[in-house]
Amino acid sequence: MVIEYGKPETERAILIGLALDSRKRGDVAESLEELAQLTLSAGAQVVGQRIQTKPHPNPAFFVGRGLVDELKTQLGDLNGNCVIFDDPLSPAQQRNLEETLETKVIDRSILILDIFATRARTAAARLQVELAQLEYTLPRLTGAWLHFSRQYGGIGAKGPGETQLETDRRSIRTKISHLKERLKKLETQRQTQRSNRQDLFKVALVGYTNAGKSTLFNQLTKAEVRSADQLFTTLDSTTRLMAIDHPKQIVLSDTVGFIKKLPHQLVESFKSTLEEVKQADLLAHIIDASDPHIEERIKQTREVLKEIGADSIPYLMIYNKIDLVPEFLPPLSNGHKSLMISAQKKTGLAAVKAEIVVMADQFQHARHTR
Ligand SMILES: Nc1nc2c(ncn2[C@@H]2O[C@H](COP(=O)(O)OP(=O)(O)OP(=O)(O)O)[C@@H](O)[C@H]2O)c(=O)[nH]1
Ligand SMILES: [Mg+2]
Image (cartoon, rainbow, N blue to C red; front, side, top):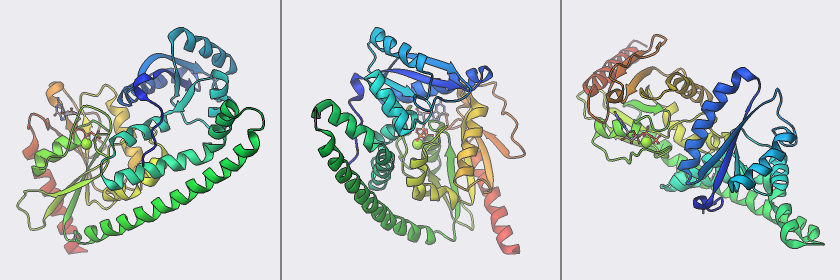
C-alpha cells in the first residue's frame, strides 16, 4: 500500500521560501523554481509564490506571523487550496499553519515522497517509499488525528481520539518493522547478487534527476529502461553487462536520481538501492549541460554522494545534452576527467566506453600490484 496525499489534480498551490538574509534571496528563488517543477511533477498547479527574508525561522509558523495572515488572504484571492514550503516543517509548525490557514500545508520532503509514491514500480521501490512515508507520518500523527477529531468529532472527541491515536501509532510502528524485515530480506538477495559480481568492474551512473542517466544506460547496454522528461523516472537500479571486450567483465548500473534537499527518510529507506552506488568501482556522474544551474547541480550531487559515503570512489564527469548547447565549456572539474556527449544523438559514446576501459585497466592494475 502506498499512501496518497490528497487528489493532486485539484490542487492549487502557493510556494513559500525563507531566505536567512537578503543576499540569499537569489538562491531561494532558484530553489523555488525547482519546487515549482516538483509541484507540477506531482500533478498540482502553482498559483503563487512568496519569499520572506528573516534571520531565523519562527518556531511556531516557520515564517513570520504577518506573512501567515497575508497568506490567508492570498489563498482566498487566488482560490488556492495548498501551501508548499521549500524547507522541512516541524510537526508542530505544520499543524499550526494548517489550523491557521485552514488549508493543507506540506513541505518539500512530503512532495518528493509523493512523487516517489506515484513512480514506484518494483516491489523494492514500493516498500522503500512506503517505509519513508510511514517514518515521516509517525511524529506527525498527533496533529493529523487531533485535527480530524476536532473537525468531525465535536465535544468529547478528545478521549476516543487519544485512544485511536495510540492504536494508530502502534499499528504504524508494527508496519514499519514489517517493512524493514521485508526490505532486509530483499537486501540479502541483492547482496548475494552483488557478491556474485565481485570479479566484475562495476560502474554506476549517478547524477541529478533528469540528467539523462537512463538514456545513456540504454545506449551503452542496449537495455530498455524507461526515460522521460520528468523528475524521478528511475527509482530502482538496473544492472547490465556492457558489450565491451575486456579481460574483466564490465557491468553498468542505472540508479535513482538525486535532488537538492533529498528527504532523509528517503535516503534512509533507499539505502539498499543506493548501496549499488557505494559498491561501484567507478562513478560516472552524468550532468545536464543545458541546465542553467549546472554548477549548483554538480555540487548537490557531490553532497548526496558524501552523505551516502560514496565520495572517495574514482569518478568521471560526463556532460550530457551538448546537442542543446553546442558552445558548451565544462566548468572547473577539480582534476576529474570530463567528457562531453549527447546520449540522445549518440555522440561521444565511444569516448565514454574508451574511458571506462582505461579506468577498468587502472583498477585491474592496482589490484595486481596490491
Ligand atoms: N536533448 C537531449 N535530451 C536528452 C539527452 N539525453 C537525455 N535526454 C532527455 O532528458 C530527459 C531525461 O532523461 P532520462 O534518461 O530519463 O534521465 P534520468 O537521469 O534517468 O532521470 P531520472 O531517472 O528521473 O533521475 C528525457 O526526456 C530524455 O529524452 C540528450 O543527450 N539530449
Ligand atoms: Mg532514469
